Image (cartoon, rainbow, N blue to C red):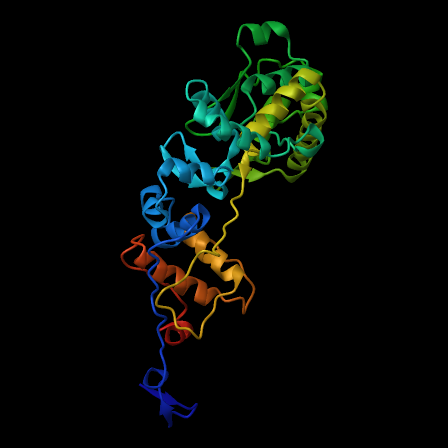
Length: 353
């Protein structure tokens, strides 16, 4: 009700006594074009609402869809229409598979296939991919092949599953069965292993992202106690590094294996296209006329409204507080949330309130 100076003394009446402090809500009842109707629909409904757009323009839904070709797409999984920035983002490779399957029997999805093909992420080649030993997306057979090639594991031990590499999808752990079966192999006991810990054990530790350690058992006060053998552990660490380097040299050496792994890597980890949010259509009814959000702030609000989980990684002074406040008010107005909760440091509570 009052304006106070820094010392708490009365300075004047609040703005509400002399001017409008809440922007008048403008209700749009009609527009001329489909693109205008889409902007209003996103601002008022937070989605592509074709029946609502039909009311605004007086055009039938089929005409609206035709006018908005390349701007909106029908999602075959949800049977809902989405804007291009939403549909042509996320896991693009997966969406392309789905659209291609539907297009076989429903020709209307051919446009989806064509659009998705144009925004596929650039394929990475082997030189751009670093494969870490122990990566769980690598098939068990490749690890066993590496073990066999590097340690020259006898075929009869592998064929009879006396020595076998296993991976548990439940615990996420690698295990090499029969680690001590190849006891006379110098590659296992000397080149890539030591007299205290052989290469199979070191490989198993490497697969599980563990540093190999060697312990001695001593007796102290009548009780057995395990102590770290620093010398043997250092030697084992050097052997472990040798195995890691050998794996890097081996993994892409074979052309067929390289093609298979590169294709799998791109499928699993290079399929996502980030969504670019546009908040230019947002009008913010009820906001004070003294505040005009900048384009990057409107885009941030759109990200919060449509992206659901958002990190506002802006620098100090970029307007994050207004972005969060505006997003909370719009979420309430659009029915996207009932109550908004802001968690702030104690020293900022008064500033926020």
